[in-house]
Amino acid sequence: MDEVDTTLSRVRGRVTSRDGTPIAYERYGDGPPVVLVSGTLCTAASERPLAGFLAGRFSVVAYDRRGRGGSGDTGPYAVEREIEDLAAVVGEAGAGAALHGTGTGGALALAAVAAGLSTGPVSVYEPPYSAEAAVPHGRAAALLGRGQRGAALDLFLAESAVPVAWPGREELASTLAYDHAVLGDGTVPERRLAGVHARVLVVDGGASPVWARRAARALTAVLPRARHRTLTGQTHEVAPHVLAPVLEDFLTDDRETSGAA
Image 1 (cartoon, helix red, strand yellow):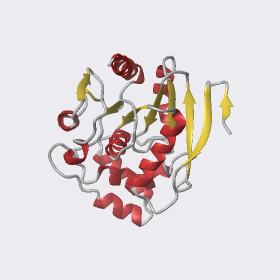
Image 2 (cartoon, one colour):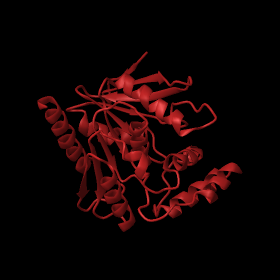
Image 3 (cartoon, helix red, strand yellow):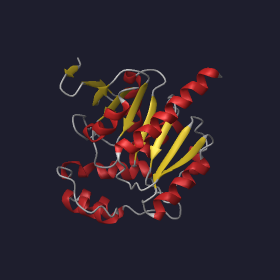
């Protein structure tokens, strides 16, 4: 049963994934459904600022990915299980729900659609692919295997050029291995994504590293119905009030175009 938090105007609930894992979610607003898929070391709570900006036009559902927040973590892990989790959330959000994924959440959203998940339009912000070479994850995986979550987190932050560790993120460090699995070898999965026929918006920040912007353009090139947008002055830590109107324009345009067809 849903729990309504009138202070933050959100509805909390849980949905059961195919393997029985409970997946916690938060819902905001009323309108066409949009599901937010969070990135590395993030939870539904991380998506609240963006959800707040979108809730005036959409019914926004943010969820705790497997192993995070209020969601379960039934083993063994497989990317297919995360896709099933997302499918369960989309089913709860409503038919034709759009997807927006940030960072690795964008890679997961695209993987789910490529695997056959039926959704509306999809937007992604800087999925951390490499346009040039495979990215090794062996050192972080080894640290996690030895139970050294703090060291694995430090390595991730150093390799990602993140200036400071976010409070409370060490408890999520074990999910770094999950995100590594979602990304595979780190390169844009051209053959798999060539079968994605949903409309896709790929967004990057104008102040992000060159490799991130190259990856965004490479990703756009392999998706059959994609367009690209750069947000001037933004980094990977994109400002929600800057991103939200771009997503709103894309989603509204897509629905109006689809309805007129």
